Length: 371
Image (cartoon, rainbow, N blue to C red; front, side, top):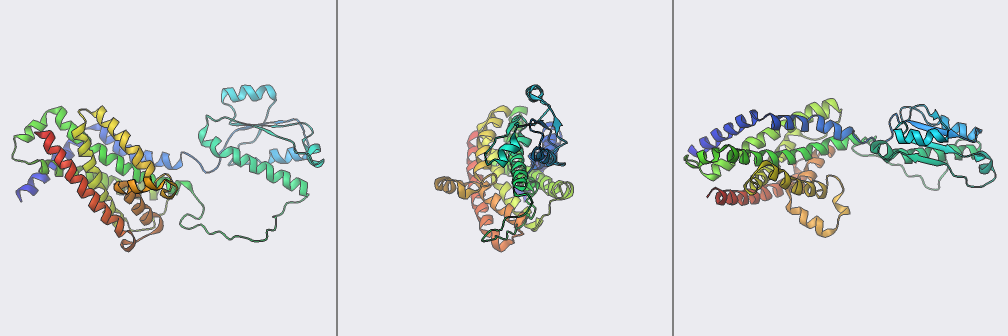
């Protein structure tokens, strides 16, 4: 009971210290609100109100059809320009796309030749340029094909594939982006908060006060783990309800209680990693560098950004030792597909084992560093 009381009181002290640190409080608020929203909506699935300038040197029926096909909300009304305005407008950032339809374009089409249309893209507008060029090419091909066929119809294929989109029927990128960003923020903040808590003790000189008190390294570490883990757990639960479900209107399929259990086990591992990094780093900048070196591979190779099946087999096997791999599988199965405990129990067991190993390793390192 005395150990539990010490862990409880030390944890409350950590919460008070966090409350008095406005930088970390603002980081938590931003990460689980605007950070998730901007990540989910930052890169659109299609161009949105893109500005396009058009040089129509042909002034034919087919060129008019192509220009009229650029409609809101994908594009603003095309702006008629000349060759001089094309270069200056692109340099000034006035147009994201410029299209040059050459003279005799319709005549060459009807003669069976393959004329070219020049499309210039402002690649500094990454969110628009990434999808806009392909979208414009589809529009031009559709209008030219309809013009040559004299009517608009669907081509009859020998076999028709009836595609059903599961879990995200409209392929809305924000649904995936929002949930995946919540997963990333849970990992990042749990490591940063626990590592910062230990470094804050060292910078303020309170670590020496703890060493002369009747508390053990296990109690010190356990207090930091449960307090910082609780903060991230509560923040992620509120973010799912208020930001993901409320603001972004993303439907959550599975049980939030089961997801919270998975988050708690994941936090058990990642907060231990934060303590370990806190024993290695001597200042907050050093902790930041360690987090960057560790967090990027964990996020990229865990299956949150790209499927694990597309990675080399040796990378897949190595990443099984990382808690993020199992947490991403668990979170996506619960929140996207509504999986229950009978499906995600292997990931829960893996998080318990990995968390236990990380906790013991971090505790051993903490004891050596306090000596």
